[in-house]
Image 1 (cartoon, rainbow, N blue to C red):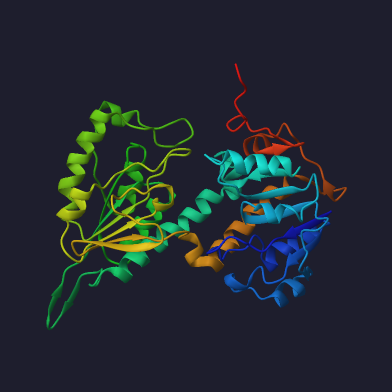
Image 2: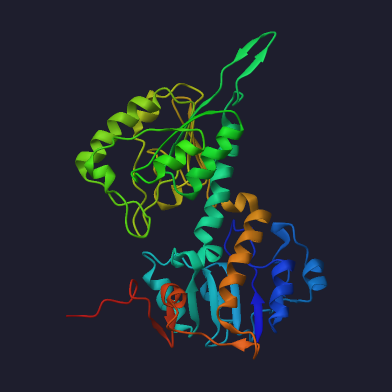
Amino acid sequence: MRIAIARETEAGEPRVAGTPETVKKMIALGAQVAVEKGAGIASGIPDAEFTTAGATVTTDATKDADVVLKVRRPSADDLKGYKKGALVAAIMDPYGNDAALKMLADAGVVAFAMELMPRITRAQSMDVLSSQANLAGYRAVIDAAEQYGRALPMMMTAAGTVPAAKIFVMGVGVAGLQAIATARRLGGIVTATDVRPAVKEQVQSLGAKFIAVEDDEFRQAETAGGYAKEMSKDYQAKQAALVAEHIKKQDIVITTALIPGRPAPKLVSAEMVKSMRPGSVLVDLAVERGGNVDGAKLGQVAEVNDVKIVGYANVPGRLAASASALYSKNLLTFLETMIDKKEKQLAINWDDELIKGTALTRDGAVIHPNFKPKTAA
C-alpha cells in the first residue's frame, strides 16, 4: 500500500496534506509513504523531517501511489502522474465545477471530497470544514485587529481611557464561534447574529449578546444536518433592518455565512458599509463564494469611505502550520476507515455512510448523487 503526500500546485496554497506525525501513523498501518519534494516547506516542515519520520522524499511521489493525499483538487497536470484506480482525497470544491469532476472521472481515479464528510458524531475527527473554519474564525479577528487603528480591549491609563472595540460576528457556525471567543479574549464587546435559533445559547455562553428577529420563521430556521436554511424575503428584510441599525455602532464586523452549494448570502449592503464610522473594519470570510459584504474584493483590503473591507483568500492558509496539522489528522482518521489493519491493505466498504457521503468518482464516472450528470429526458 503506497501513500503519496502531494505538493500543492495551486497558487497561494501553503498547506500540506501530511505531517511527520501522520506519516509515522500511516507507516504503522503498513503503508509505504512518499512525500513530494518541498511539499511542506510553506507550512514550516522541511523535507528532512518527513525523511526522519520514515517517508521517502521524491519528485515523483504520486507515481504508482495507491492513495494520493492533497489539500486542493488535483489539476489536469497533476492527474497525469496518478495511476488509474488511485484513491485521491482532497478538498474538491465540487459545487458548480462539473468540468473538473468529469476530469477526475476521466482520469480513472477514485476521488473523495473531504468537505462533504457527513456531520455525524463518528466523523467529527474527519470534519475538515470544522477544523479549517475554526482557524479561519480565529484569524479573522487577528486580521481585523491588524487593520483596526485602535486597541481592542478597554484600557484605563493615567492619560485617559481607551474604550473597548465593539465587534459584531455575523454567522455563528464553527468560524463564528471561534471569532466570538477570540474577540472576547482580546477584550472586545461582542455581539453576534445567526438565523439558527440553536446557536443563541452558544453565543451567550461565550459572553456575547445575541442579535436577531426572533419570530416563528426564525425558530424553524435550521436543517436536520445543522445548516442554516435560506430565509424568506420578508424575514431577510426585517433582519436586515435590525442589523443595519446595529452595524452603525460597530467598530469591527466579521461575516462567516455560507450555504453549501450556493453563493454566499449578502448580509452587509453598501449602505450599511457607508453608515459605519471611519476607521471601522469588516472581515468577509465568505469572499471566495461571492462574499457577504457588498464591496468585498477577493484577495484584497478594499476601502469605502475610510471603512476597510478585508477579503483575504484562503484564510486557514494564513495559519498554514496549524491548518496543515489539523487537516492532516482529518485525512488520517478518514483513511484509517478504509484500511484493513490486520491485512495492512486497502479495504473500502462502499456501503459505509462516510464513503457514500464523500465519494465523487469511481470507475470512470461521477457517482455522488448530488453531482451526477443530468441525463436527457
